[in-house]
Amino acid sequence: MSTNTAPTKQPVNLKKNTANKARATLVGLWPAVLVAVIVVGLWYSASNFWGLPRYILPSPDLIVMEAIENPDSLLRNGWVTFQEALAGFTFGVLAAVFVALLLDSWRFLEKGTSPYLIIGLNVPIVAIAPAVIIWFGFGMASKIVVAAILTFFPVVIYTLKGLKSADRREVDLFSVLSASRFQELIKLRMPSSLPFFFAALRVASAASVLAAVVAEFIQANAGIGYLILTAAYTNNTPRIWAAVAVSATIALIFYGIVTLVERKVIPWHSSVGPE
Amino acid sequence: MEEAVCVRNLSITFQSASGPLTVLSEFDLSIKRNEFVSLIGPSGCGKTTVLRCVANLIKPSAGEVEVNGMPPQEAVKRRQIGYVFQSATLLEWRNVLKNVLLPLELAGVNRKTAMLRAQAMIERVGLSGFTKHYPRQLSGGMQQRVAIARAMVMEPDIILMDEPFAALDEMTRDDMNQWLTEIFLATESTVLFVTHNIREAIQLSDRVVVMAARPGRIIKDFRVDFPRPRTGELLFSPEFTKLRQDAEESLYSAAHAMRKVAP
Image (cartoon, rainbow over all chains, first blue to last red; front, side, top):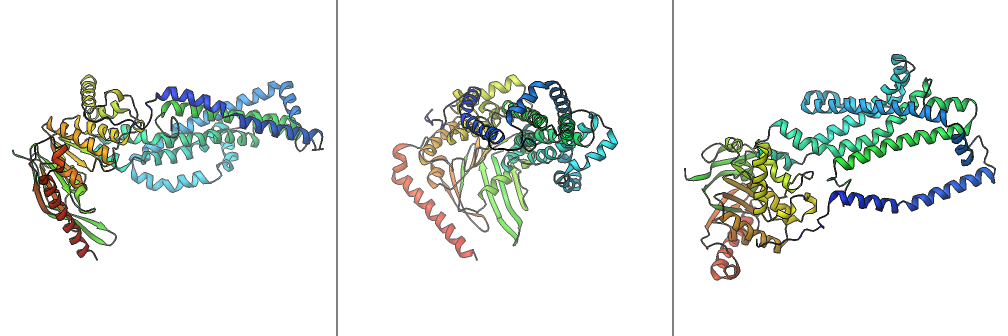
């Protein structure tokens, strides 16, 4: 062999690199921790020394005390919201993938529906939550449906876009290799769509929690939205903020899971692994 | 059946914004079995279009193309054509081994045989140590070698190469040319190679075909008879230089002719 072209990059193992990256992330976290310490410090001072009234923003220690003293209701209601959001997210994603594949293989249907998908993405869909509650009742089912709707639109639109994102030369390659349409879908267009799909999942993971909480505001007998509403009636601001923290935690858990799965599934993509 | 590729009276017309655009007009080219032919010419002269026609990626507006005595569509279906694109066009989610396996998978070759063939091919392009690497962990030259391995793993009769080394630096390109010559000598393949680089064309080919643009047509067809591999002193010999100058002259006259025609 007359060639000895060196690789431009170190022949690294992608998995090992992920571990290195995780450690780097942890080390890189300290500026964020510092910011948190400063913000909480200022907040504490504002509440306790500078006269910020409790009904506007309670001192952070009061919020923590509330969480410690009444963990039951936070956990119980948080669990309800978690289940609603998770179920809605799951149904929404499944429906979106199914519809995206259907529209992708049927151009007429895609042309006919794409304006409405864009409308669906942009209209504040939570506005229909009251109607959904009338259809599906006060329980968890209506919240799941609202979460599923909010998940559906971004996922279907991005996945459809991803299915069409394959490079023209890659399509030519498959043509020269005499690939069937099905092979092209499975081996080229679906893998090409994965980065788009995961980007949509990240958007949808936050949206599904938001949807469940908003739907609970309207009419519910359990969940974080319900908890916030009842706390607001009694002016229990520490409880409101503790509930807000729980809902944020749920959304972060979703986001983290999506990111972890993304790293496992598409380690080759530039949004993940080594640079 | 002597001819691997036979193009007769080929015309290609695209509909562009400013009306119909004739890319190729009455183009004739025939390539013998196990011949290495380079197409050179100014940008936009339709070199790539010829390749795309042979690979059934576009249909001729008039005239005909035969590959191994059959229409391109049939040759593609029988997997007799390998294509190497200007960029490596590797699937970024597949490592080197799986990229080379792709044509075998698509052809339904059983897993065991496919693995053996892919591994043998990877060894032949000198990348045995890199089977688990992903495309973006490889240099441009290595990526292009993977692409060539992928094009050759089905042992196609005809390999079409569209400026495969255009993006590489001069040194790497030289290495790749040496390497490609070795590979070519070891196979029965016929190669149709598109390039801008006159030296590369002469170094690699049995014939160098010079094209002019608008419409794309052949203006000169040189035979190259130097023994292979063409390395070292030969590249600086008077004969090589003479051929290079001749080719250069006809290439410039082609570019000049184009400028006269251009509005």
